[in-house]
Length: 611
Image 1 (tube, rainbow, N blue to C red):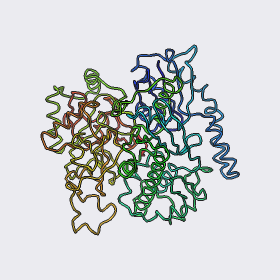
Image 2 (cartoon, rainbow, N blue to C red):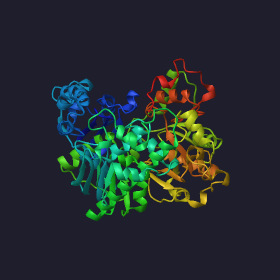
Image 3 (cartoon, rainbow, N blue to C red):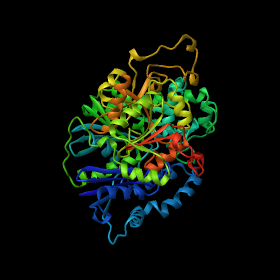
Image 4 (cartoon, helix red, strand yellow):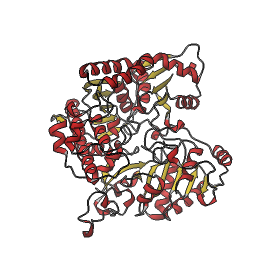
């Protein structure tokens, strides 16, 4: 039985193909269109999933959309009515789109599917609920036979946070927190106010937080959020505009924090750092209290998580370390893209009532390597078309050569196997470097990624050596847990730096793996497993044999504002627009010094909108 899951029309459109309960393919539309967070119908992702599964639309058993537009429309109407006459401008802007397209979504889906493949009669089209799709994406692929499930995001139809109990193939809803009281939207309000883009820049706020002091925590509790001991909360809507306006916050919010929102791309000040730290601390407290309450209510030993807030890996790390659960599992595509996957799995397990088998040890995400892959022949043809000289080598030569170049301080584009599903590069579409290099973070940020200097990089570490470097000894294959660097590897802050604060601390080495150690001695960890990514695992092993270090810097293969690369052509263009030293595509080595400059305009800023 083939089920095609689709998420679209809000942000991060995606498609997923599930066959007899097995995830066959999944990809975000942005990777194909090169438009970050592309919200349009995922025509390219659908085509890819069908091709990977060798199936036509007319042969599918079901197509399922990840939420219910009528319920969302109900929420919009009730919200506008509650806040009337405020929000009239926003109402007049949004309603024509709803009346023209979103309200008649089934008809729109059929029209879009007909563009992919002319259909006499489409398959059965179903609609899941937004948070149900999130919960399904978290529980059904998890290793657990029984687990509590916590979903937190901006808003679905009505729910902004929801709790579930998963057992075998069943998901039972327990409770939810309704709109407009939203932890995700509270965090996004601070994202907006600190000058970053909503639905894109939240991870920047998380990365900025360690540079600040929790100066505004009590202000947030006193004025913005009424947080109960069990983690439930209500927001004071007097300070927010997202219900009625076209902005997240209003003038009362500005007055509370002493200034209007920072202009995007302007200089960051200590105020923004302190705001980031404060909202991060509050968010972690809410996450931890909700997780503890869910454990008390269910008695479950394990926790699964999804929704955009579940990408807050610092909060996840606190739940793992301080929470009551034996283990937690987070959906790697925790945002709306993963809703396509959850909706498809719900059809199989709930609508069809098919059983589910959980191993207790391994999930069924296949390492999240669910996107397109390219053979060495396809790569060679692409490089020839691009006029790009390359050398094809054996595996033995490739791993030895790349490890040697890494140890020499080179920055390498690494393009191997199937593309990752979700926002993280996991060693298939990655830019990699030596974690021991004290200059690597600044070089990668400023000359490779062209992004803000404060942003940290993640370590890829051999699973068997994770506890040698970090205060953690569990699987973290999807880069969704933060843990401290072990004490023995830390470098004490020199006396000369004791008075420094904020960005001035950036260039002070914190450990013997400085390129992946944030200023608070933390790291966002990816454990690398031989079963799910044997080539990346082998590279790390070869590097370890050469250097005695089992860690590499891993960042996504893109520049700022660009989606992670999908094809060899994408990778080559990114390589040539940056100061990467070497590109590895399958078994092909591409050296910068051998290449001619790109003939077309190479200014990536004209192609991608800064995030």
